Image (tube, rainbow, N blue to C red; front, side):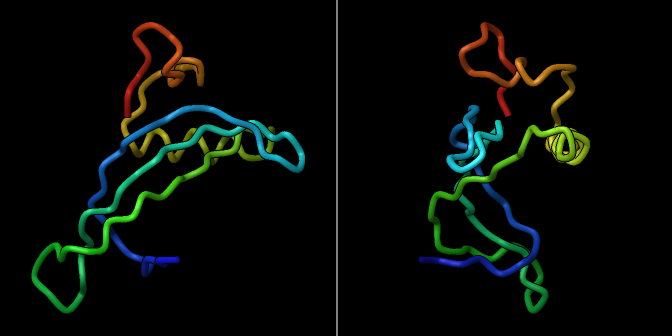
Length: 95
């Protein structure tokens, strides 16, 4: 299993959707990404990295919603409802 070092990466979003956790059934929004490169402190720019698809989970529980909304705003989401992120919705917001 490949582990990525903490830091800033350039990545492509290759999928998005919704699901529920297996143990508690907590709903989440997910992004599937493929990192392409990262910014290494020892170099002057982005450095290629191994490309393995990863999944990011953004939980939609009462406690997690403020953090999820904050993260989605950082990624450019400007909508007012999680439904707007659902690929099953006509005109959904594609990250």
